[in-house]
Amino acid sequence: MSLNLPSPMPRPLLFDQVSDFAEGLAMVKTKTTLGYLNTSGHLSITVADDAVTAAAQYSESLALARAGDYYGYLNRQGEWAIPVQFRQAKGFSQGLAAVQGGTKYGFINLLGEWVIEPQFDLADSFADGRAAVKLGERYGYINPQGQMAIPTDFRDAWRFAEGLAVAKPADQNQYGYLNPAGDWVIAASYDGAFHFSEGMARVRQGRFFGYISRQGDWVIDPTLAFATEFSQGRAAVLEGAKWGYLDAEGQMAIAPRFDYAANFSEGLAAVQIDGRYGYINPQGDWVIAPAYSNAGPFAAGWARVQVSGAWGFINPTGQPMMDVGFKPLGL
Image (cartoon, rainbow, N blue to C red; front, top):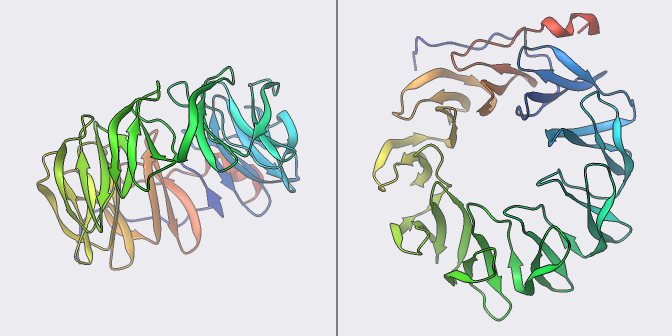
């Protein structure tokens, strides 16, 4: 393959681990430093505690981080806003975070105060004012005050997305969709079901995938070997051994020719061909040549990419983020 397109520049690929950008920051880690880059490529936050071994993206101005076997939350100065104390924890959403205190899960606020005392066997993040929780062998949903908004009548329950949540009734083995009031909007009749995105949800009937509307009508019939959710008007689908993209009408907008295909974000999608990743536009044209060993989605104008085990960031023209902020670290 010969493409006159941007190719990677190894020098700025400095990091052992990176995250996507969120709230204007991306986690980066080297053998000696863990911190956060801003979108100008400067290390704006260095994690103060050397015991921190892993840190997540910022969410509502706090970043989940691990030191030893326990979790806490970092502020935007890289210091502990909520000290390490939880055996398990999730990022903040709608002002609350699910954490494990002792053997049970509850929810804390941004100050680290218990708002909903630990009482659940499992707990997910809030979305649309509801959080899925598990009591014994059953799932239900609570409101932000900790009251049971939807009874524990389910064998499985997912987070809400676009106002609907995937759930499986206790007495059935198929999935449907609930609204935040707990009403079945789409009856439990699917062997597999996934979040709504751009007004459609992918569902599985037997071995095959298709897409339904919010009314439960088939938009794209279940004939696909595998499929992903819609993003920016395209959905990656598997046909034979190759990936392509459907449009919202179910037409093949980009013919199957990739070994792997990711979702579109900020107008580009990472795809793999012959063992290398590059980026295409919604018409299927190469924008950044397939020259990376791994690649992530674009966020805040940057995408994480990997070459020879090292990570860095590129912009939508394939130009690398320079390492201006790292010279003092001696990398």
